[in-house]
Image (cartoon, rainbow, N blue to C red; front, side):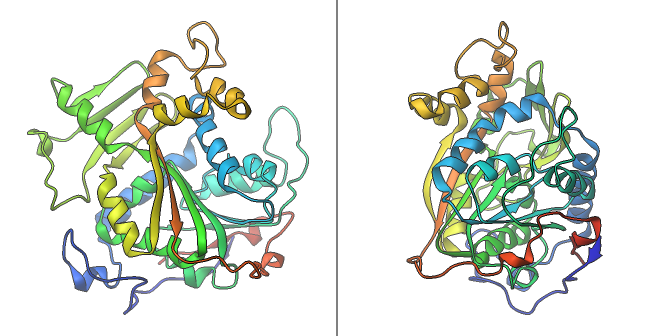
Length: 360
């Protein structure tokens, strides 16, 4: 793995430095973070490096498949934030994208993504090579200034962040860095698609529970005693941490993302909401469309997971209810003549030395 850009605090930020939520101009102007946040980020990275791909997570990926099919065009340049083990590579290949850059904090995940891209990851059989050139980067996309790291790769047509945006919500500085990175690298009119926990659902379930913990046979969520009154101040929407456990898949700290705050903050970075839907609502809408029936069947919208192992059980279906899908679009009119001309920076076969490592 080669060492790349090493970030040092900047005296200027991307986008508006003001905040209506938790004023801290000196810190937010530099997007700094404390050591405890970095420790949590490393814990998450270590967890995902060590874990294996799991069936439930793969089934829930059907929502991502629909988002990619809806918003990706042939030849698009893709920025995949928190790309993990490369589980979406096949989806991007089916969408016939022209260039792909994936970034993830976990070294183990990036290595798995690399081998998957090279066609060596499938245990059952080797698959054909992917049709698009790619670059892989190991680093924290909520800390590094990606417009400098990827200065010669953008602009991108589409940015994706699947089941990971909430990890930026530990501090306002990290949340701002995440959105600043997306905005700086998307072309005008470019699209930001993603999935993350639905704060409204989680808080509703917490308030309905007798204790500070709730769940079923496949997941549980636990809040610390500091939230014993089950009230959350609107003036402090960042750093609301809980422990999330998903059977054989996830066991790490996560953070509540009040979506109205996410929307308002995104607007400061010229990212306008196109739509937001809870996963259940999303599935019920797209299961009506013939071209997505099979995807929705795998998600569990059709069939009975207790009888048909290819679909979700009721308890697994409840897990899907914990998430939402969103689409944002960067303000401005796209330049139809502008083409991403940096795709020659990508590789059709990625060696370990080709993977760039960034960080402080």
